[in-house]
Length: 112
Image 1 (cartoon, rainbow, N blue to C red):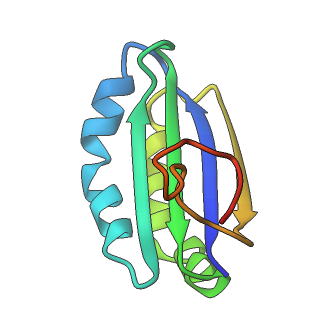
Image 2 (image 1 turned 135 degrees about the vertical axis):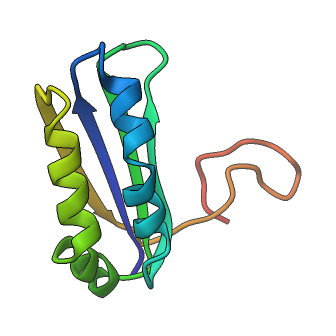
């Protein structure tokens, strides 16, 4: 079952861009891990302290491997050096997925 991780990380606003630029190797390393379908850290354009994290893993096993590995631990250590003030994260087990636009081209919340 696919796993999606969503997180919000707040850093010193004066250092957020520096933190993201310096995290590039950690991000690319995670993206290259087996089972990683997506791994992104993005600055929030409306909150100068906030970073949004989105991860997509093909399975619980792939996420579990990431969480005990060097990429995860390295990113934690890296980001902690930039005035981390708060962080929250959640994971979701994806039971269903489908396109937002149906076959008629209309955006819908329904799964076809």
